[in-house]
Image (cartoon, rainbow, N blue to C red; front, side, top):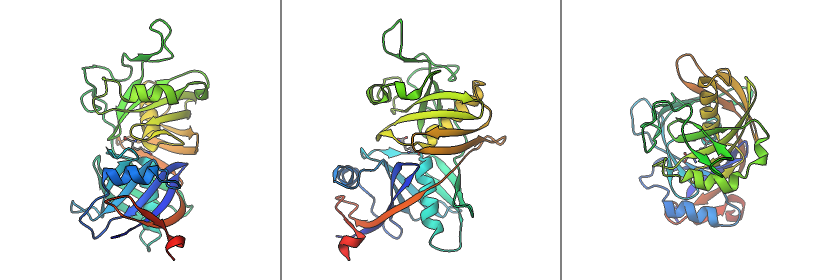
Length: 291
Ligand SMILES: N[C@@H](CCC[C@H](N)C(=O)O)C(=O)O
């Protein structure tokens, strides 16, 4: 096997595999991603494949692969894991990356927390994208459940490089069957590129409780870009301030929509175990098993 070293990590329980593809011309194939996820012991939400840079001025190109093999443009928790992975290699603690969403910056602080500048949100219907025109994406016509008593309705939608819908609720987010509604909404025809689906409860203007069904990965313990989209959607609908703590099943993130329009995400990243994988087939070995 022409093995790629990887580190299993998590960002607040969002299960991440960081694969070191530097110096290689090949990629982690969709089939490999599906096989890795199906194997006992390696269930994950995203693979963050670190490649050599494609654009001058950036240090790394990061390819983000969901557990269903699809590509994602952005991944907030995964980017924190990548920053942590690289920061342990030497003295450098801040990095410039390229992803399908554009150029991003990440930095590890002395306290172990990591901040990632996730770029600017896109709010026009065609940028999210939606299948039909909506002049105002703060509240679009979309509902699930009985027509006269919808369970979830009128989400705010935004792109953080990847598409997000934020459904606002007043009661406990755990009372909603997101495992049932998530797949239907992810694949709703209004979202031509599918979407990440979140349920958000604003507790105070500086605290949101959030659960997310991720496009291409399903229910997750945390989704960083969903937290960013919820804060942006909260601020522009006057539900929240421009900075808030977002509480996810896996823990808290701090999100700020700065005056320069950039959305900045801060939180932890945790290392678990290492191994080697074949990027073509997904066959993998844990380091201690190989030794
Ligand atoms: N876990 C991520 C989001 C990953 C990408 C998403 N599933 C998509 O397809 O857009 C995060 O922390 O942002």
